[in-house]
Length: 223
Image (cartoon, rainbow, N blue to C red):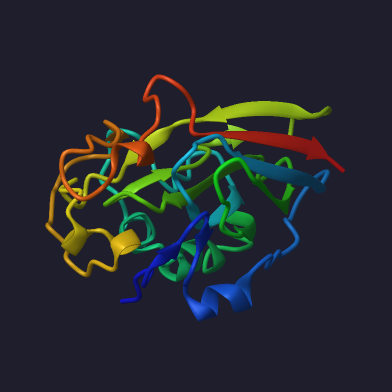
């Protein structure tokens, strides 16, 4: 298991080396009307660094994650540790079957943007993905089965914060990878909206966000 080892102001200090090697991996989607979409993620928070993330196009009926359901092992490791490799493997092993294309989003500092491209088709129209909220125990954000095949002009989507439900939100130094913590206080809850940062332990309140507002904006442009 690999965790973020630390954060320096407004930037991610470390993430998995194999993830760097996979970055922007993109396998052509199979099927009717295959097209490329450009995805731009803007970090709308003031105090959360976004970890590397994984997005994939997939068939209807396939779920990378869903609110109210347990997190997969891949999502758990991504949301707790910023380790995207198992989550990406969950998509790559299904290329040409359940998944059409997969790609990586690089870390995003507060107020900044990152871009990726993905292929969609009539058979793989939906896009899902996840990015860790770096200064949380197991927080993440990402699209959930959004139909991007039908997009014919630049379109903006709001992305809200979710809690993977796999680790207690202790906000203690020993449990936060952002502060070098290696603890994992286990929790067994379904995926749910993240309650935000309390600021009553080691995580400062200014790492928080307005839980009624999106933590990111996703702009999709067909190419």
